[in-house]
Image (cartoon, rainbow, N blue to C red; front, side, top):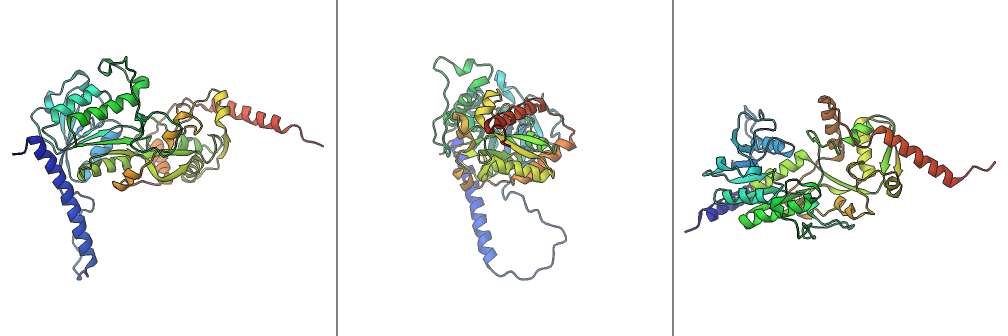
Length: 394
């Protein structure tokens, strides 16, 4: 007789097979001639799951979480939120809310409950993931953990796939004693992935997004660019126009998370985009197009930015220098995600929606790379260029 865990896992796999069968039958039906029929009086839903599921989300009220919740509900799934009730406690009053605190090990409200799948958007320490996965192992069939491409060791190499070497904590550091994330973010997330897989072997999808962008992004990292370009002025751009950038629209990532649940996807996946290589020059053109801006771009080499003490990513968001070890994080391989059915909005659409959200919410972000620092760097760069060319001959 199968154990409870085996039964739940088999149920998830059956769901995936059922979905695939429906797709195959739909394709067969599409090939047959369809007799004329009267138009329906009401439009039928076009984006509902064929098999509604019960889904638990650990978190659900901040950043990616609400977007996942909205997508799952739109697909017809039943959602339960587990969190402390401190971040936006009024969110989703129509949904079941369970209270607890992973930081103190308070998981009591999860005991004795069954779900088809769990989405973990709030696991940052391996102890938290280990405890939640162990408690839920016999009560869910599928664990989706939101990780990060920061788990990879810094390496100046494009096209790294999911088998690339991972960050590791120093041997002297006990992860269960850490209270803050700091520089250990990537290594801790890697340990979280391993903890989930150890407690629920063969039942875990570890999704590794990169920079998550779009409306409702509290970090304002990508938001800097459409807002800055909309100013219709001279803009400092980093590196060269051909330097690659990678990011994923929050709504696309949420759609993919829910799709992985519905398909019972078991894998490690780099969940980042866009679909094909995107140079930063093209990204800035997308911002310019959506803002209907007359901005002009001056590309300043990374070595000069370093001399001006202007840092990649933190000062100038979205961009990392291809010359530095972190450069590989702007060009990871996404073949596995594409095969799993990830889809992307265009850079123009992402820039447009982000700028519109920024304006509609009257958001006033404060970026480390201020206009004063930018102007000072541009003046210094133009002076260097002028000195290099020398005085004009009469």
